[in-house]
Length: 312
Image (cartoon, rainbow, N blue to C red; front, side, top):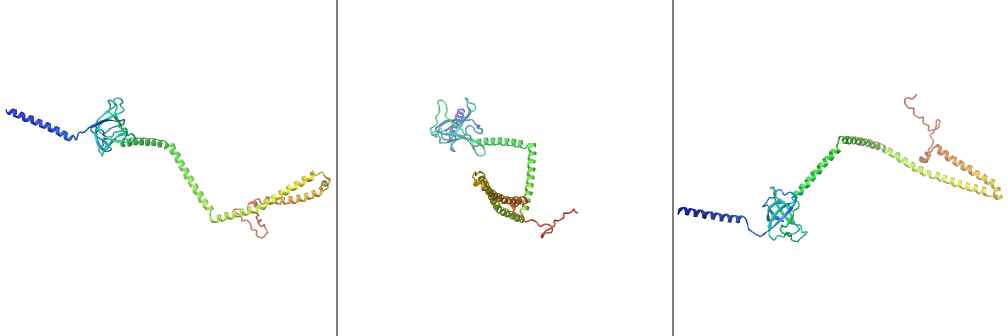
């Protein structure tokens, strides 16, 4: 009887322990509610994502990851089977991303709706509906960082090619030439400042005034030259008229006309000779005007030239 009582007590204890364990599992397992299963399709790396990881819809926990496996029909794809709360509006515009929590790097699936297609997502026969996964922020940063590193590497290679020994010598020569040019420009600036002293400025102003005066004096000269040309033309017309006149009166009047023509030619010749002599003696008078001749030896105001050193 005693052995039977011990066996009964042991059996009751095991039964109570089993019920307590089931109750504890039920308690810690949380509330049971209807769920739907979907597959998240991605071609990217899913490092850090594990089964039983959270699934969040716009930041709210709505389910968990059931399994992660490769697609048997295409090994480039990774299939993530998730179970989420039934009734969530999973549409054709719903996308998934990998989110990371805190500094631990624990990954979870983050669902969001871009609003492009509000029709509900449906599955084909015998398969789960598939939700496409977009690149996460860390994945985008990783891709951009890799591309940036490649660009930096290419840039360094290009810089090394540019800074070859031959190009460095050419750059050094260019800098030396630039320094020489800068020095020459500095010297030219100094000389220009020396030329543009107040005294030289006054001389330049005086020269410009004389040039303006000469231009004014050249006006009568050109007017006189135009008058000479006009007179030559009139004389030519008179001579042509005299020569082509067949009448006796024209022939009889030839001598006086020739005398008149000779006189006018003499006057014109003297004037033209005077102008040419003036141009031959002082051609600069056309620009600087008529200048007085310097007094010679024995004349008032004559100054003897200074004798240079070293001459007897």
